[in-house]
Amino acid sequence: MSEKNRDGKRTARERLAVEREKQKTAEKRRRTLIVGASVVCVLGLAAVIGVVAANAGKNKSGSAGPVVAPSGAQGKDSLAVPVGKDGAKATLTVWEDFRCPACQSFETVYRPTLHELTDAGKLRIEYHLVRLIDGNLGGSGSLRAANAAACAQDAGKFRDYHDVLYANQPKETDDAFADNAKLIALAGKVTGLDTPAFRACVKNGTHDNWVNKSHKAFGAGGFASTPTVLFNGKNIYADQTLTPAKLKEMVEAANR
Image (cartoon, rainbow, N blue to C red; front, side):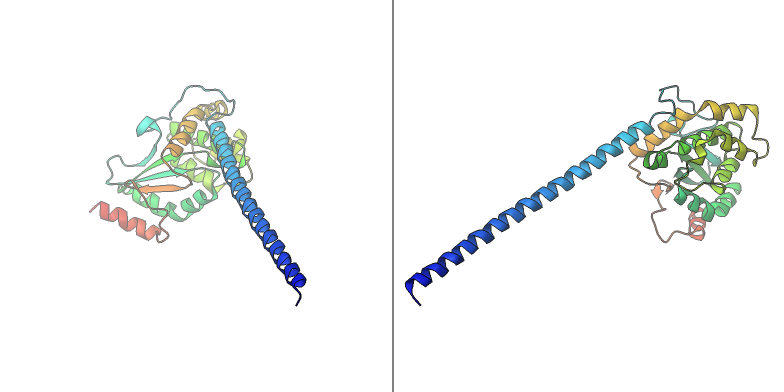
């Protein structure tokens, strides 16, 4: 092979090596840009979530009116609606959204056990109402239903109306509970609830800002999903082995 040919092949290899190095550099730069863009997307999503959360903190009219807790509300800032006997040795804290399908599932599966234990004086439930789905999907059905449930609490009918709302829950994407007329119609399923006082409370959004304050406390507590269920302060619903029978045994054990 001539010296000229050898030089030509060497030069070609060098050019190929340089080209490959350029490609590596370009690929590295491309990956850096992709990662950077991904970080921006995440931050952008966080910003959107922040805006949604901020908007969720306002009532339907956007005003910052007084926080009116329903009758008998207890706990810090009177944000808990109690069901069951005061002084019961077992306490279940439940954070719920009336538009939340998972909350409906929890109530459907555990309701007979919860009623049995609260009626026996062995369990006390503290319900905290939030409007998570309003923020995720838009609308105001979570807020309107929670306000109506608080109005039912004023009338001493919270548990019955709470159960009616879940039994008649619309699809998650259907903001049917935003209609006060529907919430009032459902009150007809609870004996003695559909009164002028209840209707006025629902229509006026008497407890809207109380619901908003409860929703804010939900976020401040570090909770991210509904239902969040705490047994004597310990989060138990995330335990995939939890069943109504297991919950009943936990309550029975606390009462021994």
